[in-house]
Length: 179
Image: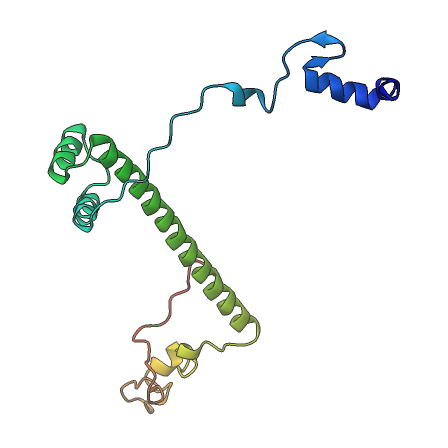
C-alpha cells in the first residue's frame, strides 16, 4: 500500500510539500505573498472628528482666505486646540471641495446655456415662438416717420403699442454678435 502512494506523482508532490521539501530539495516553503512576511504596517490613525465650533471657525477663516500662512495656521491651530497638521489638512480638503463645487456649478451653467441656445435654435427653425417676444410688433423706420405710420399723416409719430401684459422695446433691436 505504501508502494502505491510513492508511485503516484501527485501524492509524492503533496507529501514533499507537507514535509517542506520541494522536488527532493530541502528548503523553507513561503506561504502567501512575499510582502506578507514583512513586519505589519503601523495601524492607521482613526479619523479625527472636529467640534461644530471648530468647523464654524475654520469655515469662517476659509471664506476670508483660501490659503493660510504658516504663522496664521499655527495661531489658528493653537486657538482651536488642534495640531498644525490638522489645520493644514482641513484647509487642503476644503479647497478641494470648493474647487469641485465650482466646477460642478460651471458645468451646470454651461449645460443651462447650451439648453437655452438649443431651444432658441429650435424656435428659430420652426418659426419665431419665443414667448417673451411673441406679442411685440416689429419695429420699422417707416412707422416712426411722419405720415408713414399709424400716427397719422403729417402728425407726430406714434409708436405701435404692444398688447397688454407685454413690453415694447424703446429702441430698435441691435443685431447680436452671435448671429
